[in-house]
Amino acid sequence: MEEEKKKTIGVIGDDEFTLGFELAGVQKSFNPENYEEKIQELLKHEEIGILVAEQTDLEKLPGRVRREVEESVDPVVVTLSETAESSGLQDKIQRVIGVDIS
Image 1 (cartoon, rainbow, N blue to C red):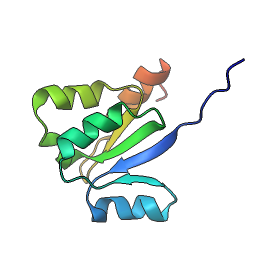
Image 2 (image 1 turned 135 degrees about the vertical axis):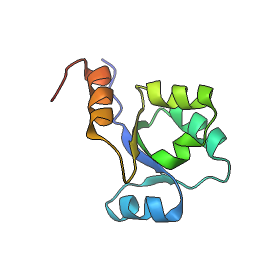
Image 3 (image 1 turned 120 degrees about the vertical axis):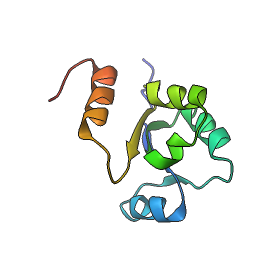
Image 4 (image 1 turned 90 degrees about the vertical axis):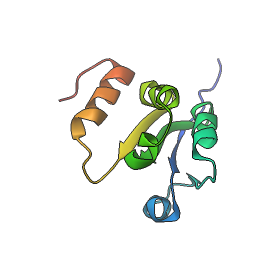
């Protein structure tokens, strides 16, 4: 029987964005110079189950890459912003587990 590997939470963004997560104990934080390349790399990272990103950073990505990020299930990408709606997170959770939790 193969042992299931535990996944971690990762966060990508500038120092101001990642600092709070680091203080809360998130150990995988990324502050890349080339955001587009780094986020595509992190989508393939097997250790990360949830990737937290800032909505404004994702809006700057080309459409194809942004869709790849938005449709990712493993890891699920959670975006945060000052104007974020909770329905976006609920939609992602529903896609991952197949159940509407609201």
